[in-house]
Length: 359
Image (cartoon, rainbow, N blue to C red; front, side):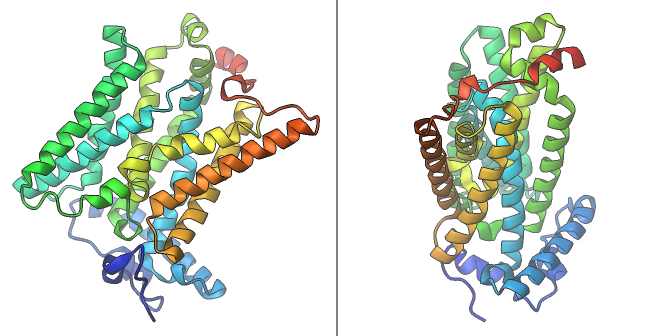
């Protein structure tokens, strides 16, 4: 059996196992991380997922389903397809689409911090965990700067973005313990480097994000569409704003594994923008954006594998193509006499009225 030589490269040959190998052996390979005992139940779920993907690969004959690293990459992609539009829908309607870029650059600084600590102190901490911590702190700083200095959100985002990326580049330039080695995988993403530990961390982030949005959906919706009325009704607006930016930080770090720092923000915006062309309600827009994001992720991963290209770039290009198709569909519907597709700011938030009474 021939291993892939394109997008996965030589590293894929090292981490991938043929379909005859035990999925557990593929997924549970570890460097002895201190998190292994905590993540053991999730490793078991990854094992079951790998068994399912291997069976699907045998049934369909798809080559990409023969490798353990692709099993993990597909699972991470599916989770991103839910998380990114779930948070991105709120961000886009609040005109905070660029916050993803700011947090992605600070997450890059978090990765550099993790690599630096591992190189200097040999702590063995996952760079994705340090990225989570730094990105969440940066998200809170954006809100604090906006609240305490009366600066517009784009000003605070620009300050945090430049500070985070500057910190990351300085740490990389120090090159302590070979810090610069492999940094490209964080900049551009890499399907082959989604380890079992990173996939398990992503599943934790996925659970936190979905559960939090599920519990606070009405309040977040009300704050999104009528912040002043929400504050008058007694909703702690500043607190929910902080919840939203922290959730955005978690999405950015999770998506960074296969999208990379440079392209991760696209998944927060592009599927949502496409969904706005075919939906007229907030709930409809959210559901449509998840469907479009999942389509972009699955098609992008498949095309990048067989086309031997970078997965993050292909996924974004597919998402943009889907957006263009949605725009064309909206124009066609308007030309046929149907109601024109609404703009992003005019989507009907029919649920916002009930949010006030449910708080």
